[in-house]
Amino acid sequence: MITKNINIAIDTLNNNDVVAIPTETVYGLAGNAFSESALNKIFAVKKRPLFNPLIVHIKSIEQLESIAIEIPENAIKLAKYFWPGPLTLILKKNSAVSNLVTAGKPTVAVRVPNHPLTLSLLDSLQFPLAAPSANPFGSISPTSAKHDLNYFEKTIDVILDGGDCENGVESTIIGFEDNEPILYRHGSISIEEIELKIGKVKIHTNNNSNPNAPGMLSRHYSPSTSIYLTNNVTEIINSFYEKKIGLLMFKNKVIADEIIHQEILSENGDMKVAAQNLYAALHRLDNCNLDVIIAEKFPDKGLGKTINDRLERAAKKS
Ligand code: AMP
Ligand code: MG
Image (cartoon, rainbow, N blue to C red; front, side, top):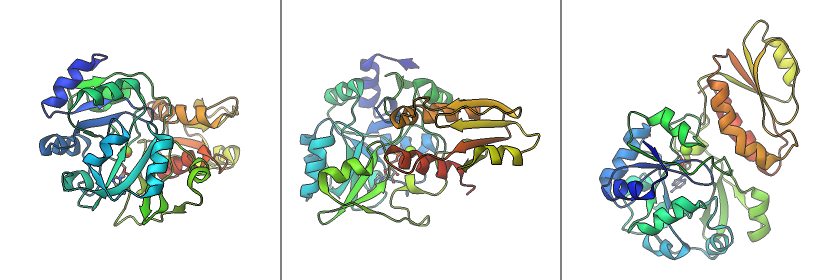
């Protein structure tokens, strides 16, 4: 059921069942972070491998003490500045946090989401919510209640409808070695904005067999149609002779006979708007029965880095 009634979501979560919840980034698949049965249901519904840890959503910075210890000064600084907001911090976990949430790691991912409905939901609950994105493992993240329904109509009972997600891409993930910040995932807050607050941030390099942040697995966020990411869209169109082509463009329209469907992410070249539209456009393209989606590379700065990161993973074959 899609509902705007927060009381239904509260009852369902108090029963240790799962609810799809709106956030400013993408929809989450939420359950009581302290309930093993709710956590198991999240993994089962998403078909998420157990090595892939979850993000814990708390109502305010004060609730941090219920899950994390030895919090670095720079983490507090970032939390005070960006919460509620699309910044996830990786912190040392306390003993109340189950190994299921953290996939056995000594650290826990945590943030305060910036969505009015979900903030009042968190305020009405006696526990934080573990909530990864509400998509089957590896597929495109959901940015509307309708996307959730398409994925989970048969497997979950309650989708809390908070409208379309305002930011449209996942949170930025920052961890620490002592007090030194490390970027684990590009996200809704650009690395430049983070560096303005705490200085240079090291970029974590990942490998697929032991991914620290599985959002960094090389194939992720993928539609079922093949994607090609390119700086030169017209050249690639010519190499797909007589194929049904879909285009995902930043701001300029392309005219060509082979194009069945075309998505322009922001006609004014606004990267925030482009990020907001990205996943919805990919969902639409994926429903057009195309042979191939050709996506235009973004300028490699600010949110363009995050969008390129998602498109690169979507385009990976394995
Ligand atoms: P999702 O909400 O589906 O984007 O998934 C949560 C993301 O947070 C995944 O990429 C996780 O790997 C990442 N994450 C959660 N906990 C940790 C952790 N302890 N260390 C590093 N990354 C984490
Ligand atoms: Mg995800």
